[in-house]
Length: 120
Length: 240
Image 1 (tube, rainbow over the protein chains, first blue to last red):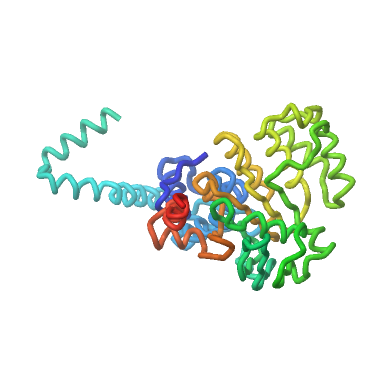
Image 2: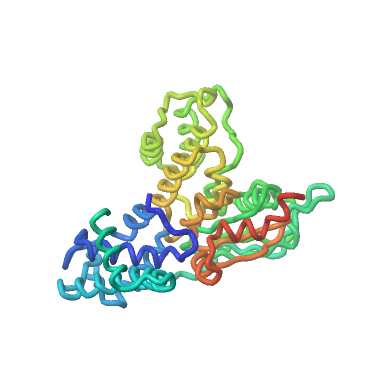
């Protein structure tokens, strides 16, 4: 079952996971995502939590509803790329802040980032 | 799925005493349709008493309780499926005997669904109650309970006696059989393992409600899990 970070609202974590799945290509443009019931089972959460996550994703223009059919990924490739950059930036911001605080300069940061990227 | 605020269970000023101890003390609570509610409290806080009242098994209490607009009566019994925290079948019985009994007893009991759940939980209809572990018994009773097409499910400690792997299985079963037009009330003191399925949590302490809130709002406001909150609220009791 999906591993949650326990101190954050589940709906936010589900949003991030679905966005990550779109960024990684697990869901592509126009893909129909699973039903509320299926997603509730995949994430092991209450269906209402899924409903909340999906409605936020819809408000952001990431998903759209086809009445009576289901929800689909409503982003073209350019928008997905943009979202990928935004998600990655958000993750890196904290790391940069902490590295700066311990005096890691940009050249060293790049070198470490490159090494870790290759290593992973 | 839209937000549905119809009241399903209304409990007003209920007091139930056992001798000089009050299991429920001027207890009031309103629960609406379409939710999964976590009823959380340490042992002896009144959870089981409350659930038995809702199931129509305890009658001698003060105050008022209604389910779907009815005071506790044959109608409410017909729409409430109750999972007890204690085994209630005689040891000589087999799983298939229990299923037959439920079939005779409840008109909303779906035998096929029950057989499906039994199979899913890797139980066998020919197993006898006495040969089954505590966890297997719990899974069996849950299958019986969830195979009813009830409006309200009252589950008293459904994950109490099972190992973590079986807990996930039980949560799956609960989620995939949940009726969005009904209501599910689940009591537990093992908050961590099951909190992710709750819409709302009700913390009860010494027979009264300490807190009744939306689970996600609590996480957002306090930056902590419901489990951490539970420990915080009840920490002092643990050492008394």
